[in-house]
Amino acid sequence: MQNIESHATRDLAPDLITEIVDDVSYLVSPPDVCVKVFDLIESNDASARDIGDAISHDPSLTARLLRLVNSSFFNFPRRIDTVSRAVTVLGVRELYSLVIAVSAIRSFSNLPVKLVNIDTFWRHSLYTGLISRNLGRECRILHPERLFVAGLLHDIGSLALYTRQPELMRDLLLVSDGDEAILHQAELAELGFTHAEVGAALAERWNLPEALCEAIRFHHLPAYAAEARIEAAIVHLGETLANRSEIGAFAETAAPETPVDPVVWDILELKAEDFDAAAVIGEAGNQFTDTAGLLLARA
Image 1 (cartoon, rainbow, N blue to C red):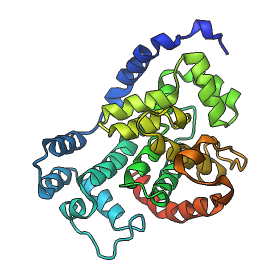
Image 2: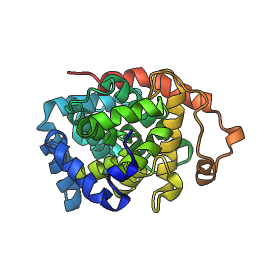
Image 3: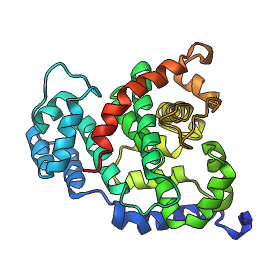
Image 4: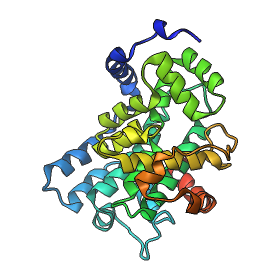
């Protein structure tokens, strides 16, 4: 591994992050439908029908969204047949979060990543998203679906780094040996920034709410989040528990001793000794197969 002096200093990090994001943007820019829906939301005068009509211009996205809202992911008592109805039931920004989730998986899967198994990457991401949403509900967070998106996209910066810095990232992956905390520290030492910061910059390009961008930026260091400490703590805990699972582990092998940052318990007002990690992991496991079939299918 090269010495830190041969790499970017922390002062240069913002410019280098922007350069990396610019380099991959042609592959992972938000599709037109996301831009259109975002503009409608920001206009503050769009109806559910307006937003539904905009989404319906993408038949594949429409089909996946309707399958998702009618799945066990939400478990609504009645079938939802139109996107405009989904907007009414879920809320505008919650449905936009799902639009982002479905679209981002399609877009970021275009990156020519060779260092990791992309299916394993998305399984880890999806498992983290499911646990994060479930934790949001347990902690009585408003609109927990947004935490699903933050968890799902928490590592998207890694895909950009794997694409733009493949040799260095190969070395760092070997050094970290499947430990994401060590990988995060190694990135900071070698690059002057981390995949979490790159991911937050990408999330900003996708017009994600600031709280979700901050949750992605600080999911390894939740105590440093200024406005979204709860969201960052939930994603941190979600990722940690995903790594303890067989299906959702970053390194393809469960790491049952993966530690939780102690500050998380204080932020979320939970007691570590009373927290049933196995039950939380199991709940996400029960949701995983159906949700993965809807979101991760190639077609």
